[in-house]
Structures are given as structure tokens and as C-alpha cells.
Image 1 (cartoon, rainbow, N blue to C red):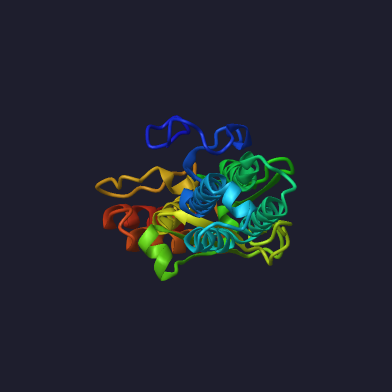
Image 2 (cartoon, rainbow, N blue to C red):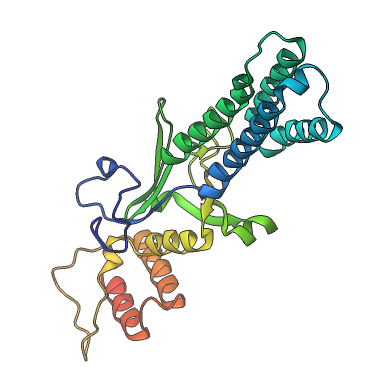
Length: 289
């Protein structure tokens, strides 16, 4: 599959400039938009509701003559702000409290100030969208690649032959919503990326963690297919009626032969090649010892 294959989305997600000459893109994606965009969108709705309620009752709140239902509504909306998204929600809560204090003390007599928390909600939505749109994951026929960062770019790649295991972690809620974490364990001691930290630590014992990926088991399958299909196995061998080893094939070491036989057996077990193709390729590898 090439980078222009119809299986790949028309609008590129992963920068094509990261691909090497002759490298084929198999899968590309971003974290689930549910994680990045739903929470700030909820915060924005809450801040807008708060602004409308306060602006409509601005004079009454300023003279402390507002009825109990208005105060209960304002307090409830304030408490919901940090519940929607912790950091930016707490900032919106602080701004909302400041606006009420200004209103009660009469420091500002224009109800337009009620919409100040909305600016925080908009900022949260724009900020999370920028992070989401600049986070990209990719699987090629040679490696996996990870890129984070809007202004400060963090990029890492790991060759398939360095990956020892691919695991998926999903909570119950994540299973219902259709996303989860994909973890690539590697044989190296460095080169990992873990987006739990804002610093995006590169030295994570080789682990590469893709967080909140949509359809994580589909992504794991694509990664395993790429890992089990290196270039020397991409072209399936059709066995002739009677196998005759080619005199032009160069000999290989016993270690390399064992590695190829193990990978060939994995292809057979996964149903990616037939028994006939397996026998032919196995005989070819053995003949090159």
C-alpha cells in the first residue's frame, strides 16, 4: 500500500515529509476527538449559560436582590466548570467568581462583563484543538512514528525490528466510546515517547505510548501485520511443482535463518500465507545455510 492508497484519508494527518524515499504509509491517525474536544466544549457551554443567567439578572445580583433560584443556578454553574475540565475549568471558576464580586460591589455597571468566563471556555477549546490537530501517529512498512507539539516539536520513530510487543489498554468507559491506549514495547533502552508528561519524556525504557487512539485493536493489528511482513516477505512465494533452489541466492548465517523461519511460522499461524507458500519459503531459507 502506498501513501496515495485510497485506504488512507485524503487529507494527510501525518506529515509526508517525515517519510523516507520508498517508504509506504500503512496507517495514520490522531487521538480520539472525544478526549480532546468534548470536555472543553462542555466547559464552553457552561460558561455561556453562566454568562446569560448573570447578564439577565445583573442588576438584581448587583443589588443582592436576586431570587434564590438565580443564586442557586449561578453557584451550580460555577461548580460545574472545574468538573468539566480541571485546569481551564478552575480558571473559568476563578473568573466567574471575580465577575460576581465585581457585580455585587458595583465596580462595573455593564452586564457585558458577565461573558468574561466565556473567553476562558473559548481559550480551552482552541488550545485543546491545537494540541489534537498537531498530534499524529503513523505506521509504515518500516517503522512507527509519533509526533507531538504545536510550537515545540517532539518527534520519534522506532523500526519494526526494535519492537518486541504491542499491547492495548482500555477502561470500560473507553471501550464504550471506542478508544484506548496502544503501547509499543521495544528492545532498546531509549527512544520512547510517553505523552502523559508535558515534557514528553524520550527516555522511557523504549516504550512508545499512543494515548486515546480510536479503534486501538485495529491499530494493533495494522502494527503487527507490518512487523510480521518485512520487505523480504512482502512478495508471496509461489512454490513450483518441484522446488529447485536458485544458484544465485547468497548464503545466510544460521542466526538469520532462524529469525526468518520464526517470522515465517508466525505468518502461517496468522493465516497470512498458505501451507504451500510456507513450505516453499522454508525450503529456500534452509537451502541458503
